[in-house]
Length: 431
Image: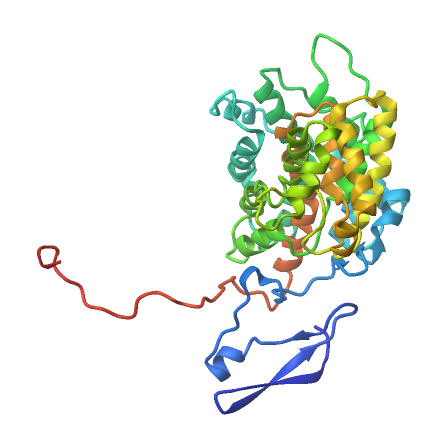
């Protein structure tokens, strides 16, 4: 932990308490309030934990004002341009970029663990044929602890390592199986000859009766989508994984909890909500009315895919995603699509309109990722499962970091109680 070189004084009810201030390597200073309740008999109140640091972490850094995102200190723009998803996985898991031998070993371990236990195929049959892929994933990933119970002892570093590799390797297979099941198509086994992103696309779109060759441009776009979503500091799903893990729950259960949280439309479902909004607007002619409604504080209509909870500047991931969107759309020859026309015009307005510029409502990563995924042929129901596949390595990295933290305690948030004070029970006939 960083040295405590300064203190903050909190005065209330006629008393003063000196609180240590912790110094990060970069970012805002942190007031350590761990002893506030013991010494002052008070809690802090912070709904949404927007001003609370719940942990130490050396994995991901975000500067929302500057629009910066770094994995282990490396800017996301550099990684997106020069790296690839599995190398980023290694970086997030182990803290440093791998050398050639380490990269080869890591890729080999992941690639050779992509198959799931054959009995898991029967587990899928317990779901309705029209089940949402995310509902299926929550159940199947949670059940991995029953199929792979030889890697659930969190006190064993080797079992933690095995569980991490298994989830990074098998989540794409499970997501593809959930998709195939919802489509009524046969499962497609993974192929060790394909890279990570290409393998996922092959499992999603190949069928036994025809050959399917993954286009490298689509594979690159999918790899970038995964890379850009690999981790994002202490967001809702990551915090869920950490909170579940703080109880000592096995890693498969923790990631299943993260997937469940990710399913929410305000989190992982944002790109799906964005695409549905574009379809609701319908045509370019309807955009002025949509803009008018978005500016009206009394109108519940919201423009999805603009602005971000953390970024108060341009989402750095959106710049990279826009490049991929242009490449994919050019490859597939999609230019006259009405939804795309609406998206392009909305993008132009958001970058020029004074209202959007002043409020810094720039297109975010969800705005472009939904367009790419639809162009690839994915239904909106698969957008969030793909997000889950991408974020798995971030969840596991954060979970491993938490397990290795000697100061880690079971999560136990406090509350501001506003209910009834103590009162006596009255028999039912006397009420």
